[in-house]
Length: 279
Ligand code: ADP
Ligand code: MG
Image 1 (tube, rainbow, N blue to C red):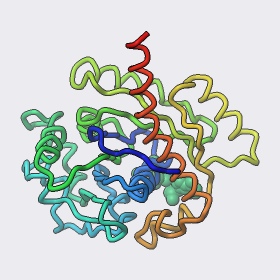
Image 2: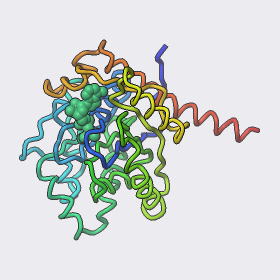
Image 3: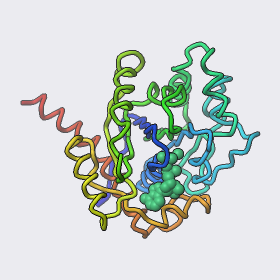
């Protein structure tokens, strides 16, 4: 019943929001693991110097591990830094190391500084041993050159929104930056998905925020919301995603449902376009 066809083009999704602590990393790794559990092959690119996504995927990322830093600054092939998560042979990770903290500054003086990730990814996808169905990029909480590299490399933007007061604050700045990227660097980038995270249905505030976000973005917000769940926050300390840590927990179930929605949405929108074309 969950049979999903992953044979289309690679979808490159950047998980971004300049606010910290809204669930970017949690969403990037758990969505990736959920997609992998559905049979997709998924590469997570950890663009945050904190390296939390690498940790959650159980991938070593101490200072001497080859990382996204080497790809962006020394133009090493992405294939040379990609590791396989112990969780699944379908789950890959290009780790971040502490060196990435300096990349934001070092990139400023480099040629084609906004395109470094995109070029590396294009080369990787053209030569990868096996087809990658999804690339999911975990961004740092800023709108600097690392995030610009993600926006330039991606087709789709996924914004996690925490169901709390001030949830929509900063969103217009983020979307303004996206328009600038569309104009100057990447015309194919589109806001495809908004995911409501850390939802606590017992509070009126969470419901109000969810309603408000749905009013503003009726087509982008997923039907699935991610509940606030202790299992989700515990998993990274075991070097695991919640899918592996406790696959039956509410958080794992929600991330799998979100993954199915995201996978199906692309099929749906392709069908819609087709039907419009026929009419
Ligand atoms: P960001 O990457 O946007 O900074 P994180 O994904 O690191 O945000 O999440 C911030 C904190 O919230 C982390 O401690 C994480 O474990 C916790 N968290 C994220 N999602 C959930 C959830 N659904 N339930 C409980 N805790 C969560
Ligand atoms: Mg993060």
